[in-house]
Image 1 (cartoon, rainbow, N blue to C red):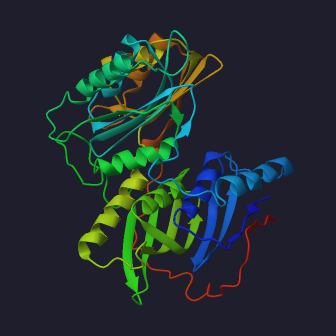
Image 2 (cartoon, rainbow, N blue to C red; image 1 turned 90 degrees about the vertical axis):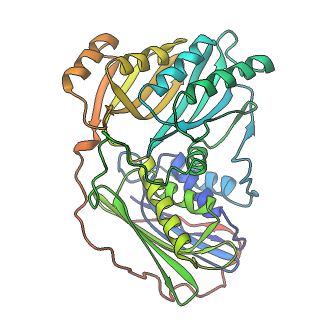
Image 3 (tube, one colour; image 1 turned 90 degrees about the horizontal axis):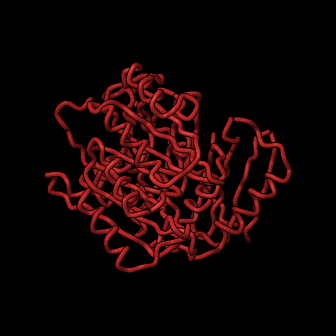
Length: 419
């Protein structure tokens, strides 16, 4: 049974759509269809969602929890865009990294942290277009709490900066250590990548180019009646796709007034009517090109191609350093990684290719599994073998027209319906 959720509010503000989508995404719900409309002081959003396995949601307690999370997390709490949701906590220190990607970079970062007795409790690492960004949460290995010594924090930052600067790239590496806290990690990764201008195309000799017209997303923009810019996007479907797009539009200071999302077995189609927060549609060719590039980057960052490897084993100081060193010594390049620990167990997911971006030789994977342990390291999926999108021209559906013109909705409520 699908859960359909119209969201009505008499208080419409910039960023509230992102907050709603973020809640659904954080609960590992997959949005299969969505209809979005807002104007003046109200908004009405309808989401069809299923669980992470594609099953319809039937449990009343789960549905009540979804409703509660949306009402509390995405209701009327003021946006804190500048702080990116940093909240007080004492359990870890957050490290943000951004710089030029290269083979073995994550291994070097993990080696530095292990040498400094920093235990990585969770982390997420993205690479895109020759750039890399990471948000890493570490604890002091001796006390299993956040690191508070200013001298030690300064040393961690200095050594990590040296690792990131181990390249002849003219761009400046960035390392930031925050006060102990909790932030929305994925939104922060988008912001780090955007600030590092990963949307600007870089061609590197010897690295496999992305196939034009097949796996590349198709993004088009068109202004209509001087009121809106219509953005249409067609790409391979994947989890958290809508979050990535809405996150990017929000941080670029664009507002989605109307929109629709439709996903199939392979493909996702999205159409949004947007304006800048100043109330104007996109007005220049340079701005149009930049928005297209940024949306393409938002779709591609998490759409990792490569072999998916999952590590499940007992956690210990230096585990991540040892695993990534083995990958590096066998010429594996980590394209994306998700690191987590719970109850003394490590569960890490890596997406890997060879150093040229091509699929990894199965014999190399067998050798690595023999070193790490066949039960500890499992081969999950090879995304490079996923079906490609058929090439076709994208047409403007202008789905909404004048459908949403009434402005009579009052008060916030969330309605569940079933199909």
